[in-house]
Image (cartoon, rainbow, N blue to C red; front, top):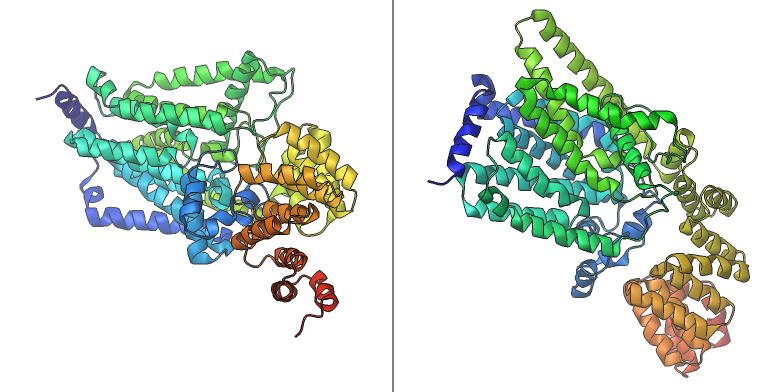
Length: 605
């Protein structure tokens, strides 16, 4: 009827050659096996449910993100118009808001959701590989490897890696529905696949690789290249193009390229691929971040392109497995390629980059293992089973151990510093945790170490500014924050903190301008409204101050300092009753300064 049907039949014949035994076709057994895999995944990751927040992205995304605390038209509009951590990921906002709705800010809820998403991805991996290859054992192998591989801990245990989990969820679902479309040729299935890809793109921009994966699916299913195959990918390609444009527009935290040339970038990418390949079978010495190599590169980096080419050629020579090898290597390459588009502060081969791409490598390894088990030689079968058991036990143990490293910012950053002492941001993140604990001495040492390793690391200057503000070194704080604003001219928090410093220096006009800029960039920044209210009082505009302080209290109802300042503004307008009520509220919420105002104004009760 259509050119696609013979291709489907060819794919069916290919699948039939790999059809499993009768026992694995039993539907009940299949679901029981899947349940056991998912239960095992839960068991090895469960010790991460009690871990804390990590002060690298978690504060901005979750801890201090007041927009996720209520489903409202304003907040929903904010999620879909404001980047989160320099990425356009509105569905991540939505997921955090759901967590807050049910958990009321409890950290365990965020970790639980991450684990549930991982378990859902494990199930989708099982279903996808089974439908793609018609091999039950192969589906089990890949799903187990994906479920318990230690490298995946960094995605599951880190709340701010939620985008990775969501994008993987929708990408896998889109591939499953696309496979249904290949079988049925129903346009409805293709349309649903497009919708799911759109949701993946709204979760993380690296999902743009999916259209290329669809061509790989066509190949493994025996569909020959044709005009129709290209035309059906156009909606996917359009979404991918839009996603790339949006990502380029909002991405600002790319680190300097260390003077890397184009050739250096190619070598860096090859180095990342080799490191990921090694860690897929030897997941030891894992770190949250890995140090960028400095130029001139060590000699062995120049060998990596040849190593990759030789390995690919060797696999290509295995003719019976060529179709699986092309799909597996292609899947790994195209899904990991977007992570090399920019150089981020947590490394050029961070562990979370391999979460989805590793499926391609697992598929190849599983195919060869399955072939070995089907071999007539008893020794080979016993050896394959023994190797699988050893790998499963070792990987599960390493995953449990790796989860303990994620207990807190102190533990994960200290672990990273011990393994990779030359990475600036790990000191910075540990410094943030120490700053929040009130340990300003050790925090200062960490921030200064950050700046020494990378003088252009802007957030170190941000927190050094906060510490100097706390120590009443307002001139020093202003210098740090001036530099931050010059480097990150759209970072709302930088303007907010600089405005607060200017209030302390009684530069109320300058403070008001900075705080207005902060609010323009982030209308949900409660502290900016509070500080602008204080600046308004200093400028003799108590009515404007009350409006700003109302906004701050609306965002954070328990904001004690805002009640205190609003009482000051109300007293300036002669509304002693309202002022006394606000000062009493401030006292009850823990602001000690309000006690004096209550006494000075003879507030009753």
